[in-house]
Image (cartoon, rainbow, N blue to C red; front, side, top):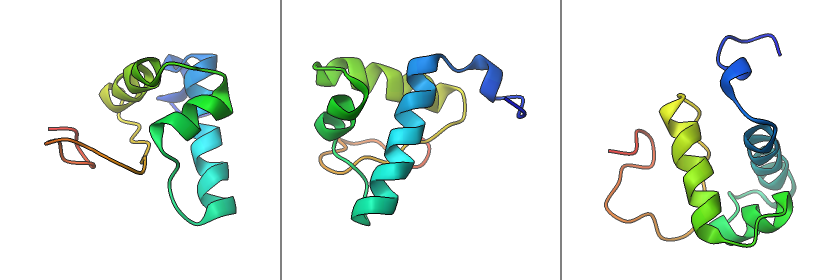
Length: 77
């Protein structure tokens, strides 16, 4: 990986980012948390949410479709 943020990501986190980008390119909208999980082999939406939170902590925002709660979709706060 060539960027400084890339080395901190796990293989699964790289797959999540890649699958989200591919989903958006194919469907024209962000995947839901469950769709993203299915694409990377995670059956628990809480596991996907954990990885999305860890990615956001590293400065990588992965958009998902559906309920977002009270958090800003851009900064997570």
